[in-house]
Image (cartoon, rainbow, N blue to C red):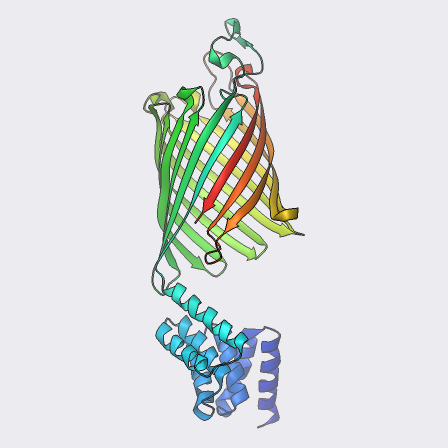
Length: 420
């Protein structure tokens, strides 16, 4: 072997070990052209080809080794990985079983079994997960009643009367059910995902505020490298008391990008057509754009969200623009309790003056809270199947240029959560 080709081989191996796979592959291909029988060259060429997505070349290089050394178990496992990437799962399993039949060391045997389980998962087409939450809330201002009982209007000061005129507290018993189904198209990075949600809240004393929500979305997703793209069709329905309050249909596009394992971003563009059967003047088209960042740093997980929303209603008095920002910090506390704190700010302003106040409404709403969650049971066979308890507290205070919409409230929540 000439010095030049020796350089290609040695440099190619060094480049591989330093994880410069593309440069390593190019070097090793040049050495392979003159010395295709070199087993060390073929091994690293196969590894570099695998890392750069050239699975056929990887198989060719590994098969050359097996021609002269048919009992190289490591090579059989490498070739199995390459066949699996090409969708030849049966061939990949055959190579794995050949190695298992030789009774390899326990660590190797366990790795092969994990790989076989992984192959089975890649062949699985349907995935079903879900969550059931049952909880009780205590809200000390269920009507979001204003902080003052006297409101200034264009006709003078008005004394509020009735249930909305003062703070009213109540207990709320609620149930949330969410079902997620994913269909994976065979041998591809394409998925069809569907999520259905049901929420029911029953007030202890004020039945007119009972809520029933049912809705969901469905649509395709595609994964490419560190990116995930999704397009979803939306359908929602809300009942308030025993009356149908709102229906909506729409769609949204989502892009998720994993910059690093501890840094992820998400962007969502959504459109909804809303219909209010009892209030046709509120029928509207809603458009929103949101951006979220998640960052893991020093055992904490930081989440930052920004959202801009525009709603165009049939009556311009109900048309508005809203901007939302939120920040939360989560970390594991002693006794494996997950703790978090959060803060959210909303700025909302309406397009047209209200008739009673003759000015455009502007709201400035703040919300801050904390939560504790403790897993109390986990399945040994299916780690995603577990039960946990969660305790939440949230304080909300709203300022406005119209006194009617200034309020504050406290919300305590206790949930039992079952994930499956």
